[in-house]
Image 1 (cartoon, one colour):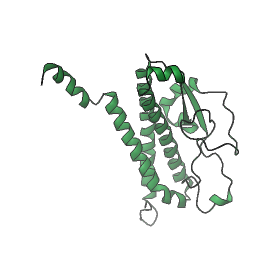
Image 2 (spheres, helix red, strand yellow):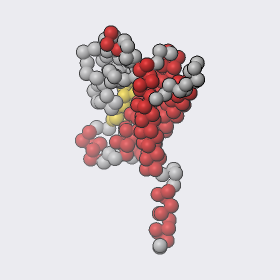
Image 3 (cartoon, rainbow, N blue to C red):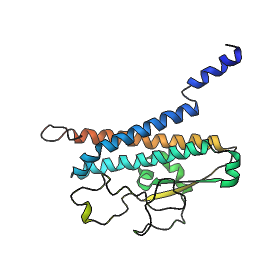
Image 4 (cartoon, rainbow, N blue to C red):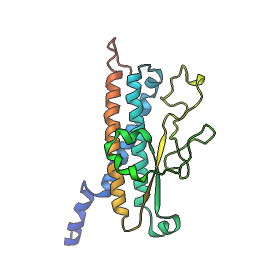
Length: 214
């Protein structure tokens, strides 16, 4: 190995390497998503509102972390020509409740799009990162937000109102923007993981001593 190779090689194992950070963040997001899906049957049957409140917050913060991570990855892969053709702004949908629950997200307060129309039941389901679609990150009707017993009795509403954050970017500041998005995603994911752990603990400590998770 020549001197140049010796200087370059360690960088790929550097835990602060942006690509390594992105990879670890995506794996954690996927892991929390799988755990949330495994909890879906228990949450559909859960009537304890205190448990549901914590679980729903975990779900909201996970969606926010996922959206921020996806945006960071998309921005890191954007070429100069893409910025010229596609504009110099990035729009990200995040759960409104996450702004209050995750302190780090207050940094986005001044970047919230205020001209977005309100949510109505006639609008299509809003997806994370859906440009031009505002007001609600709507869960799937079969989501654990709905109890199986009464899901059919209630009209589908917006269980997760959302905010659209607009971030101005250029090629020179792209790396800094990516780092900021990953930092905010990390903060949201930490809260989601904590609340998921609390949910699992509460579900596994029922009065009869049995575990109600799966």
